[in-house]
Image (cartoon, rainbow, N blue to C red; front, side, top):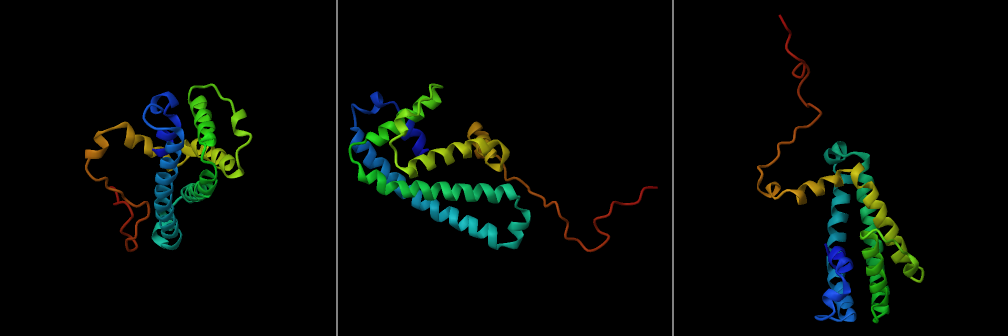
Length: 177
């Protein structure tokens, strides 16, 4: 959400209210706090998925791969914070914002990204890779939540295991006459 608002808001829309330099400070502080909270949550989730045998058994390899990719992406995003504090003129933020707006409006131009530090470039490439992997993972379910307001008010979903842990003979179908 923060990247969407921060990168895709046109400059002319926020400039009457906040300078690009001030916007960068707000983005770095708010993004840093959100990033640390997400890092802790994702680390706990990854640890639980790896250490709990029941959860590991019901997890797909793609689930684990996506979690690791998201964890690496989040880590690289946090690595960019010192770089963002290192330049207070907002030129990097404006270059990243211009690039993102051009991607969304189908006018790609990466020339403004050439001078960026390596963590930004890796963060961009890995972020685009996550978008490419989205349809092939359970991350695709994010869209069903945003697409429907009814999702918020629906009853709990009943999830049944694919594996039956019943004593022998209980999971065989009844004999037909």
